[in-house]
Image 1 (cartoon, rainbow, N blue to C red):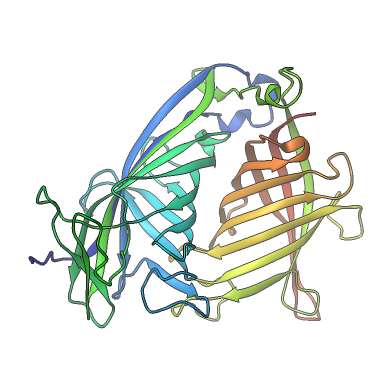
Image 2 (image 1 turned 120 degrees about the horizontal axis):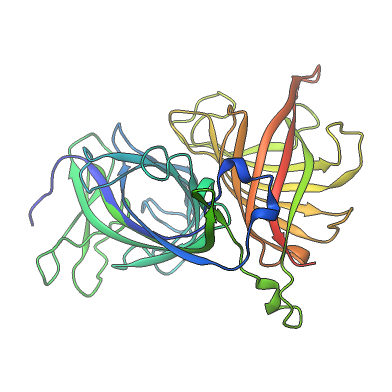
Length: 407
C-alpha cells in the first residue's frame, strides 16, 4: 500500500448555492427589501484540515466517559480552524477560514454533528460569512449539510452544502496518529473527511488503516448551494425574502421584517457569572478566550443598557473560541423572549463573533412563535465593559436584529 506524503490537509470541496445580498448601507432600510425575486449562487472552494502534528487545525476539547481513543469516537467534541482556498493546493489563493465545533454523535457509525462558519477574508465574498449545520457521515463519498444563514452578502440566506473528500495525506511528524487508506476499484484513494478514523473499517470498497506516529493533513471539497431572494438596488443587490408565513397561517402571505433592539448583560467570573467554561483543548492557555475553550452562556437581555431596566428574557447557548490567530467565538445560541412584544417566542442565532471588532454580525437561523421560519442577521456591539470588585468582568452587549417574522 503506497504512502502519501507531505502534510495532512483534508481537502473538502464545498459547493454552496446561495442568494441573499444586501449592501451594508441598506441594513436600516427595511422598506427597500423586496419579497419575491429568487436567485441562486454556487460557491465552490477547498478546505485544508490538519489533524495532529505541530500544525494541527483540529483540537479535541472534551469527551464522554464512554469515548475511546478512536479519533472520532462517540462523545468527542472538537474545535476546528481550517484554511479554505480556491484550489486543492495549499499554495492556491486563500479565501478565508472554516471554523466551529463538531461532535461525534452516532454510537454505531462515524457521523459528526457540525456547527461551522465559513469566513471569507478575500475574493468576491470578502467580509461575508456562511453558517452551516448538520450531520456529516464522514465515510460517505458525498455528504450534505444545511446552509442556515450568513452575514454580509449572505444575510438571510439558506441552502445546502455538498462535501466530498479530495485527498488525504500523511507525514512523519511526531507521535500523533493519523490514517492511511487503500484505493477503491477505480484506483482512487479512499479517504474520509478530516482525520478519518482508524480501525480498518470496511466500507465495501476499501478500508481505512491506522498509521501510528504520524500527523495528518486532509483536503476536502466543499460545495454549498444556497437559495435566497435578491433584486437590483442602485447597482448592487438587496435581499428579498420569501413570504413563508403563508405555509402556516391560512394561505396569507404576511411575512414581515422587524428590527429588534435590546441589551445583553454578560458576566464572566465572580459570584454572578453568566458565562462558564465547560471544556478546553490541550493547547488552550489561561487567557480568558484562548483557542479551544468552550463556554455555556445564560445572559439576561434587557430593554436598556442598565441591568436595572426591564428584563425581556435570556440569551442562552454555547460558544467556542475557534480562531488560532484572533479572539473569535463560534456561537450557537437562542434569544428567549419571556416578556414584551415577542413574549413566548425564540430566535436562534449562530455565527462568528470577532469580539474585538466594533460591530459584529451573526446569522439568524430560525426560531419559534412569531419567529417560526425566521431568517436574518444580528448586529452586535460592545456597549460597555468593566471589572468589578468581585472580580467579575461585566460586559453590556448591544443588539440590533433584523429578522423576518410571522405576526
